[in-house]
Image (cartoon, rainbow, N blue to C red):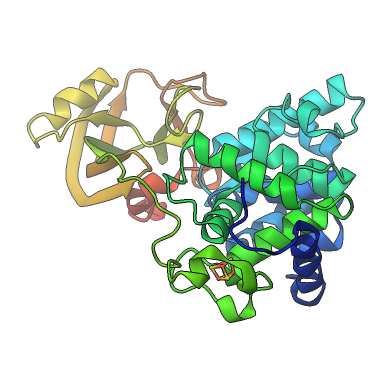
Length: 364
Ligand code: SF4
């Protein structure tokens, strides 16, 4: 990779580290960068803004202050602490990886990016972030921020989401990466991407330590770079969702362990938009009869690759042939009390509109 300027590479790292020393963001996981803290923060920050993470991070650490505590925790507690952050596979993998660390690494976080990638949920980016910040490994943590800065600095104009772009960025950063303060250098790049070379709106080039050697700035290309190939259209799925009340409880079930929202709890639902006359028939397949049915408002939830367009029904059931109590068996319908809903079972935000419709006064 050729840097399209005459700036020496050691100058680039020095300039950025000086800038970082003066401008670094104060973040809780930076003030106490134990491997567990850095790991937890990096997992929470995937797809989530720093400001949204702060509260979750503090609550999670208060409940589960060590890797050992996390490994011993019930998965439902972990999911509950994550409720609202979304992308729940992250917390399930966090829990799995904690068990791996206890069982396979004597409770100590692995120290190299290669070894870290053997843990559940830790990919190349997270491994590089932990290894550089906690153990000073010389490796760039390439995420959207680093890709954007790379593209603007060098004028890279191919699809920034491609594997080729990641390889080109790795080559660029390898040329300028310092021998020491590797974690600070990655964090400086994260801060530069988040606060100066921003994704939306105009980058703050006048505040950028690399403004004198930036291809995009010199050529007026800040708004054109990075280039992203157009996305495929999202598919649309129609669903009918049921809030079923029976004997002072609400029917829930657990989703399959694989796929979208894997292993989370949900209100019973089925594919398609059922009409009023089709609703009793479907409920009979769940074992409910003698029902009153009232329509609920429609709702829409957008995932990365698909949209759910939902209609809903409030159901008051007098009979359920499969009545059971206690801890649910996997994938089966079960009944939850008001306190179960509040404290135990987390329902993903895809169903938020129906969660808001729950009649707590119907529940015990
Ligand atoms: S000069 Fe501007 S476009 Fe170039 S890296 Fe800095 S902030 Fe980004």
